[in-house]
Length: 414
Image (cartoon, rainbow, N blue to C red; front, side):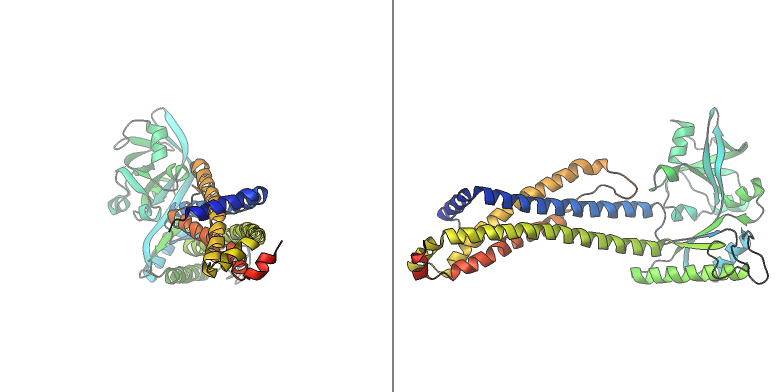
């Protein structure tokens, strides 16, 4: 129940200790402010990491090969390990039950692409139809590659949104012809990619066509897969790691590569990396909370000291209250109310200042690793709970001391 007299006492007490109260409120203010900023930036780091993984499917496996660095079974180091269609087909056959999407790739970096008077250098990738899902690509217009394009070795291309803007401007590219190193391809689709500009400056053409027109025979630059996901994240990670190890072992065995040679055959497991990075994010968030709570505790100690001073100054008053029948619970409530009030006012100001700053600068922060730092509703509610608990904790010791004051001793106090 609202008690006007008690609130008058609280403001009178704060007025008598202006400097101490102000400094204490400043420490609580910055404690909450720092906590909100740190938690907001931990959210920004998580958003940045998630956006990086959204560029491709999270459950992706990529296979790359290079030169051997170690001799093996009488073979000298320095051999080039070349992936071929047969490797791709053999893996697909052996691990069909674990594979969701699959594609062999034959990539041309910095290919000269022209349309009328416009030209530029772009990455052109020979790929299979599944590449759309491996890349998380969304079609804006037209369609992606299909099996008919692969079987027929058709000269068709699907281009990224940025590539379309640079070459075609406002013109509709569907059905128009672009030239890749002078070879004509008909544009059948335009896609967007959550990875942004870097991923949208590409063109996908049928793998069979790329191998034929670029004289690659049955060579592949890399293999990409996605693993069938389980409802249990840890099980999916374990399956992905197991498949990664199997692919590496099988390819090294087939191409006579030393099992310890890390350069000749590399299998990159995105899901395992995602687990490690999300675990790191949780650690960073915990550290940020620890630092923020530590700062709040310093402020709480200040509030507790203020309340001890208040209790000492009002010892005689408290004794008189008890002598005329005031219950210990009412004394405790009076001290706790003042402590919670001081903590809450300073804390809410810090909370609003932190959230306001994040809202102001958050949209302007858009790096690869930090995107849109912000504090969500649940975090704000947790912060409010921490505030109330901190205020109660700050007033507990002084309130307990006040409740144990004996009226006779208090009346003798000078």
